Image (cartoon, rainbow, N blue to C red):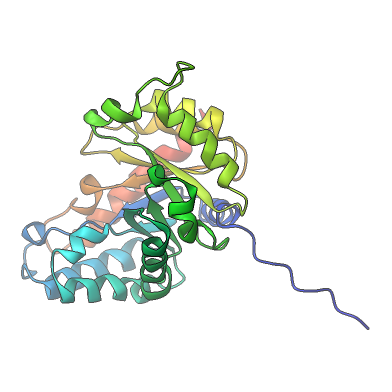
Length: 280
C-alpha cells in the first residue's frame, strides 16, 4: 500500500483566514509598550511590562486572532526589552498568531539577517516589511510560504501623500502601482498589505487591485480610523480579509487592578463591531 505524499502547508493568507473565521475574530491587538502608562500597582520597569503583557495576552488570546508587538518599543528598553519581545512568543504560544511589526527592508543580504531575526529568533508568524526597495531587496522576507509578510503600502499618517500619493505617468497613484506589483510577487500565497484605517477610500482602492491579499488596517481608535467603513471597503472572498489592529485605545483601556479585563472588554467591543460591519 502506497501513501500519498505529504501536502505542503497552505500559504499564510489561507491560514489567517481559517483561524480568523474559526475564532470569529478579525482583530489584532497591538502591544506597543509605554512604561509610563503601565497601570497602577505595576512598576514602570521591564518586569512591570512583562507582568502587564502576560496578563493582557492571557485575557485576550481567545478573542483576538493576532497580537502585534512593534519592535522599536522593545528595542528602546535595551537587552531586557529584546528578551521580553522574544518571550512574547512563548506567552502567546499557539493561542493566537504573533505578527511582529518592524517594517524592515534593505538590500538582500541585510534582509536575510532581518528574516533570521524575525522568523528564526522571534519566531514570528507574520511580519511587516517595507517594499519600496524592490523585489530583490525583500525576497528573503517573503520566501517562506507559512510565514506572512504584510507590505507597508498606504500609511495612516497625514504626510504619507507626499510620496505614496504621487501620480505616475498614467495618472495612477504610486501606491496602487506598487500594489499591483505585490500581487505579482504573491506566488506563495503569503503576502498582505498595510493600509491605514484612516483612509477607507484607499482601502477600497487597494482591495480592487489586490483581490486575493489580506489587509492589515492600523489607525483605528487613537488615530481616528473608521472601523466600519474600513471593514466594508476591505473584505473580499477568502483569503482577502481585513485584519483590524486595536492599538492604544484598547491596550491602555484600564489603569487599575482590573486592567486586563478592561482591555478584553474593549477588544470584544471592537470584535463585535467588525462582525456587524461585515454583515451590513
